[in-house]
Amino acid sequence: MTLQTMTLNLPGPLYNRLKQRAERAQRTVEAELLEVAAVGMRAEEDLPADLAQAVSSLRFLNDAELWRAARSHLPGEAAAELEVLHLKRQDASLTQTEIQRSAELIRQYERAMLVRARAAALLKRRGYDVSVLKAEYEQSSARA
Image 1 (spheres, rainbow, N blue to C red):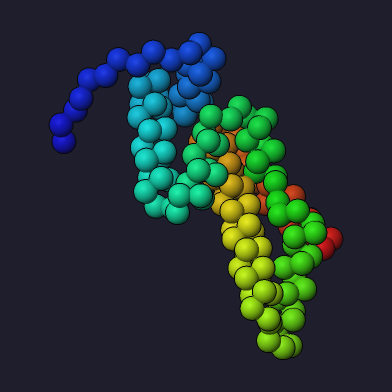
Image 2: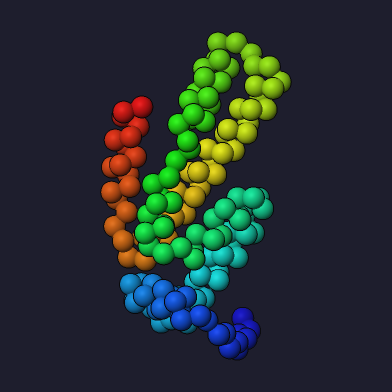
């Protein structure tokens, strides 16, 4: 593997966040920057463009914003509509419009889950214990 040398000027706040992440992961700033670049490239290559865009910016969020993203979910109205369509599909066939709406809602759900998962993975990589997210999710599922 050929290595290329690069000089990169980073704004102070971005460098400080990168340095903090590196310290939490017990890596050098250079190693952390390489990891961020590699993860970003994989995200763009492995996902459809709209989903790649949704998660690519997560790595630039501060910790509080990442926690909010990790706790986000499909809005209640959309979740309820998706459930109604799912139940209707089990009992009868859906109209073409309902099939399209169901597909759209499923895509929204998948996007929300991907954002949550990637945000949790980033938090874990930053050294946080994300097991609380599982407990919160189980509690919210039990209430639903």
